[in-house]
Length: 274
Image 1 (cartoon, helix red, strand yellow):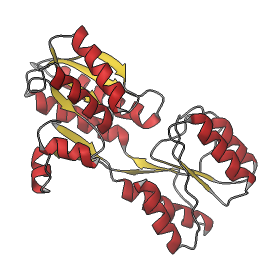
Image 2 (image 1 turned 135 degrees about the horizontal axis):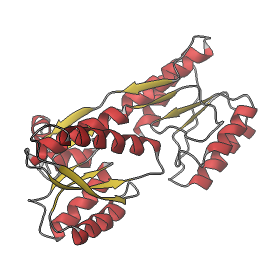
Image 3 (image 1 turned 120 degrees about the vertical axis):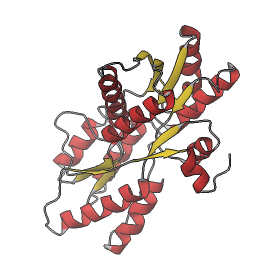
Image 4 (image 1 turned 60 degrees about the vertical axis):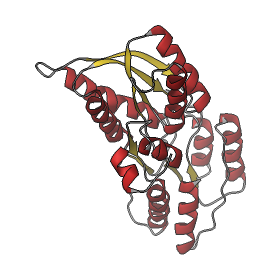
């Protein structure tokens, strides 16, 4: 809700009323919400898709009604669904930071790595893409210890599925060296699986997000590092872009907010406790 709260706060300054609803990760529910907004003839729709492809028909309905659509956090991958501007974390660059953190965490030793992914969501696809590119580049360096991605399993972006998939990875690969999870809930679920298996101190864990619980886990040494997002900036930037659009100014098709790598020392600096 941090994106929505900051968007609303900034939008009020521009004279907009903002109606906020949540799709609760349910595509059918979100589809209905968008169609309700179209029926109400709102001035604009801001959307963070539950599924990057399945939401296409609802966006096309808004397009047909002449209602401009903006996306935040997660982009739309559906063909012929027109979006004015996408405002989000630079997930691809963040994924590359996660890859750099993985190399750092493994200390030049290389090893077998698992990935907890979420292939229905564009932002997570980009995170994994950036991560893999950095790992591949590292493996091409002369004399580098190879980092081998031996497992990619879905985590649903949730603790429970992250836990189960991490368990499956550990059963299939007893010599696993590290795991990259596409968000903090999945990383925390994986951490619980590592603790249950008695391997939490041996297997390194890289997350993504910078949620409060994730940052505390980093401060406690339970997660090695996260590329952290700035949802407040995404929300405020979205409101500013929409205001410019209605003022007749040209707006970019995409605005990306950089991530920053957050390690244990950052958590300690922030005074975080586990």
